[in-house]
Length: 299
Image (cartoon, rainbow, N blue to C red; front, top):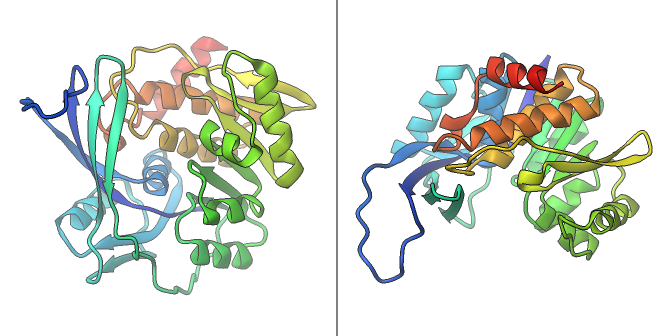
């Protein structure tokens, strides 16, 4: 079985603080955490770390950050056959303030607006493909060449490419922001009817399965004709960076492992929740055994 993750790869520099800084003040930071990041990139890292034959396709620069990302991929066995190392673009970088008191994060991303992969001939066939809304032309080519693959979209933000891909994939796993913008329905986490209404509007437009992520509340979908919130577990978050990416990676893992939809979503919720206990997106990916133990404790 082969899994492809296509999209953005970035390098994250996280500064942990116990409060959000006041503007126009000097703040001393005791430490920093550096690691690779990016939606599809984090998914590929998790899937390979958890034992699947996983490929990543995207662009990094021929620079220090790009080299560090490649070393991380090699450490867990991500196949970089389709990774483009560019002399034209710098590696995308993100600078993150992690408010460890409440677990929030503020992300400043430096990404060249023109960065994109060159056309590529994919020699391999894939069983599962995850997209994150970047590299639309390559994504369309992968869908065309892999008609039998199960396709999953990490629909984090409302972009033209993300909306186009959302109409083509088997699973649209979207943030509540994406769901609100596309459905034109304001979601209130404490009002179940608003979540149902947003979901219904999305299903009028999209052919695939729709899952709406609800941050610490878990996620929502329809299973066997019943609307359900699959709850997350309660944790004291210190850094939520990458939790959504890690959720998506665990969801692809669950599908590839043959889990039914409800188990897949519960498993993914647990994985995302455990990730916020550590600082740094890729560094916070939990061990598979820890997720399995927590899942078995709950059921």
